[in-house]
Amino acid sequence: MDFSTVIKDRYSCKSYDGTAPSQEQIAAVLEASRFAPTAKNLQEHHIYVCQSSEALAKIDEITPCRYNAPCVLVVAFDTAHVFTYPGGTRDSGIEDASIVCTHLVLAAQNAGLQSCWVNLFDPEKAKRALNLPDGEEVLALVDLGFASEKGRPLPNHFNRKELAETVTYL
Ligand SMILES: Cc1cc2nc3c(=O)[nH]c(=O)nc-3n(C[C@H](O)[C@H](O)[C@H](O)COP(=O)(O)O)c2cc1C
Image (cartoon, rainbow, N blue to C red; front, side):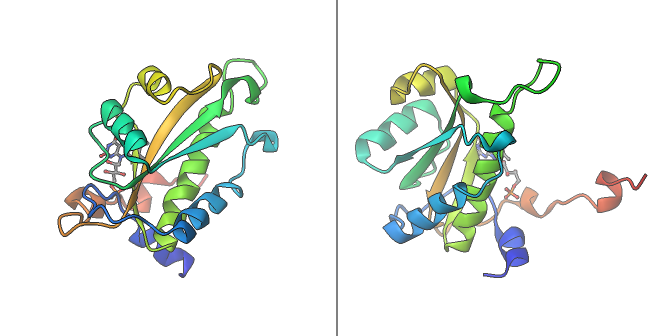
């Protein structure tokens, strides 16, 4: 698919029909994560693929935002392997994992899937429910699947600021 079409057609899907994506589609989405830039190329992220009924039940304990998605990617990062920027007050963990999520949602669109980036959860509760290693922090969940009849873009999807509001040439 043309790149600008992928970018423009992606939207946050909040109702899925429950049909499972193919393994090829999941593999294509995951493959895109490998090419996300990370600070110092540390690649400190880890993605958990939740597809079993047990794993999806755990997701439902964590967030109300699965929307019947048959697959949820949990994007975490290893807090012991982030890059700490000069000055020592900030590190790369959240940024790097966010770029990974961006690759995932765009690759999902390219693979014929809909997606939704979900941050409405308690990271500590998510970590406990999914039994993640101590040093990992969950950044986001990414719902994946096929839109149901009700899963069209919400009105706010079309509400885009003009570049004049968000860009300044210096
Ligand atoms: C960082 C981030 C967190 C989000 N968290 C949630 C969430 O917890 N639940 C949800 O339904 N949508 C969530 N969304 C989706 C946004 O609501 C959606 O991206 C925004 O309204 C714009 O709509 P669009 O993605 O269809 O263009 C999140 C999106 C981003 C980028």
